[in-house]
Image 1 (tube, one colour):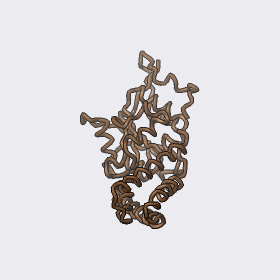
Image 2 (cartoon, rainbow, N blue to C red):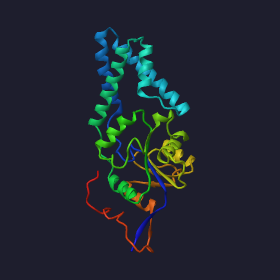
Image 3 (tube, one colour):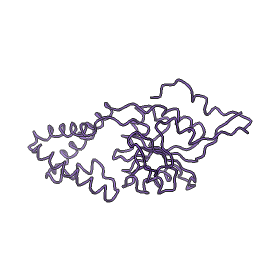
Image 4 (cartoon, rainbow, N blue to C red):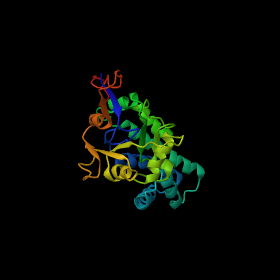
Length: 272
């Protein structure tokens, strides 16, 4: 009888473009959230056009700092710098602006959420059933609870929870490919200090995912949803998640028993 053996003792996934399909217009969502804020501050005597101009300027400055330092700045930090530059000092108004922007942006993101990539649930369940620790590691300024809501809304909460195996770059103060983000994943998923020796990372961006994991000595997989090639930097390149089975697992024909780890691999379960 045949059973499956994992080549890895820790497997990490990126989110957007890796498990969830790339889609939606981030800039359009941002503009709608900004327009909502402008409508709220105008009756309070603040110039909405000036506010948007300051926002654009601060956004460019934030992006430049992130590219130079690989540090992560949250949406709240961005908005606070805009409010300072716009000389809006009232705590009530500041909190209202920040909460309105984030709430509006998140509601638009959730309403425009794209489908998960084909095979996502099958490969995660196969990994989980073989008792290989999973991790979700994403560059994001969302808070843990905010991202957990998104995870739960698509049915991925059975594999990833904020308390145990979700790492967002915002909590580390850096973003991929900075090693601090990857180290945070190991520390959170292995709190007893026993680090895994064979780690696989799957992502859709060469710079953030492949190079970042390579620098950690991990095995890297580029899923080609965003980029056509890693130009030889990734250990593996795939076009769909179903290809991960052969990368992760090998068959052990000597086993006397058959595990149920792959029993639903060919099922017709709709996990897209």
